Length: 121
Image 1 (tube, one colour):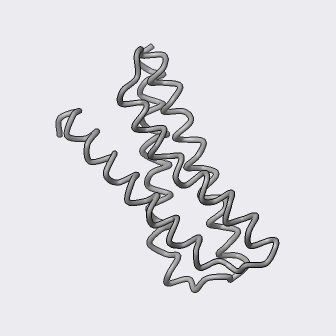
Image 2 (cartoon, rainbow, N blue to C red):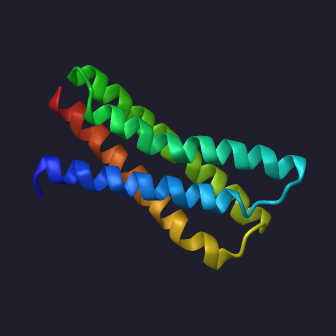
Image 3 (cartoon, rainbow, N blue to C red):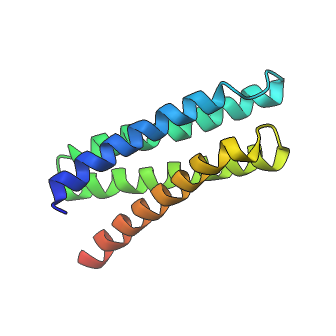
């Protein structure tokens, strides 16, 4: 797969993930704790795609690398919040399963991109 095609697909994938996170967040309890987790998960889950879009349009290699590391960090944080929601059993496992898999895959992708950038330095 060519880099431009990969970039377009990953942009679409991270946008779809953000939409999934927003929809999932709407299912969380309206308790104080639920609102805190909803806010954190929504921020980190939507930030992945926004930062990747910025990375694709980076002005320099260093800027690209920095944005990719942010994507990795935000994906990791999103995985954390999804684990919390799962462990609290606030949402049925079947509704969480797909988005948890996607979060893990996005984290692996951005970690891999970051490692490849480090090895090319």
